Amino acid sequence: MLALQRESHVALGVPSLSVSARITEVLDYLKEQQLVDYISTFENEVISKAALKWCDVLILSKHSSRGALDLLIEAQKNDVNVIYDIDDWIFSFPSYSAGAKQLEKVDTIKEIVNLADQVTVSNQLLLSEVSKIREDIVLVPNGIFIEKYTRQNTYEKDNEINPPRIVFTNADLLKVANSKDIFLGILQEFFHHHPEYVLDFYGDPFPEMFTMSFLHFTKRIPYEEYMVSLINGKYQFSITPLGGVEDYDSLFFNSCKNPFKYLNYAVASVPGIYSYSPIYKNCIESNETGILAENTKLGWLDALESMSSDSDLRNKIRINAFKNVNENHHIKYSAHKLYDLF
Image 1 (cartoon, helix red, strand yellow):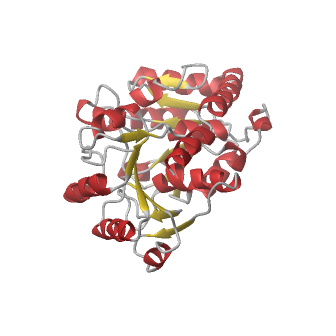
Image 2: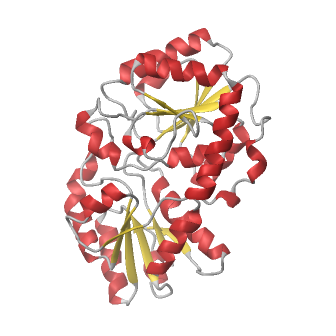
Image 3: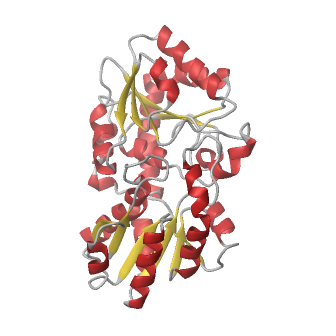
């Protein structure tokens, strides 16, 4: 297999996290099972064309460049099958996103979709919508390679550091629009009343972060390194804002996203607060595997106070979320589905 890396659609010069979460993690699992061998290169590397003479399958993930399209065509000339994976609605972007530059590449994306031997998507909504462009779409569910990062006993009660730290991860700009000022104001209020807490932020910088003295910034790092940091951080809990029904203009785009933050945090034994948004409502039971917060001042403030004050609640969520992800979102399910395509 040849997995093609690419630059992030929303951050210049930064490798895509989707390629790792959706493609190379699955291939790592299949390689460990001795079912495949693979290499990974960036789409602009000369080695890519040379590797086409070696591989049986070329896998792309939301690629949108003419170079990727040319490589697809070259692959098919060499009898190499091409799989194109989609885990976001890449045919348009909301106002909060830095991915607007992708709009000029929609025609190229649709050409790749139509030319690929197989197109895979990550959830039911994408399956329904991408099927309007091409009918024979295959759903490959999201999963996480749990054993690669941790063992089951990591959700024990001593999994928190003191002084307490909260983790917040976000690629692109903040994914809330109408409730953004509310969310930022709540953070200021919470950390004012709880000065012992620190907020560790991983991801792409956003303008408002420079007003937050309590925020410690770490730029986006490779997926494996990020997972290790989450586990070693021994965080008390995490926060994940995402626009819901109050952000009508971006609701469809947000609903096409995937709950990878829930999978990541659950495996790292970090109980989380998540916006009451479709992708999290569909996989989280509030106060059991996470806390679902309405994007209102009362919703987020109650969630923050509940999570920070109740260690029993945190430990219950920590245990239940890990078990839920291990039973229902293990990477073996997505790996076997993708291997069937191979």
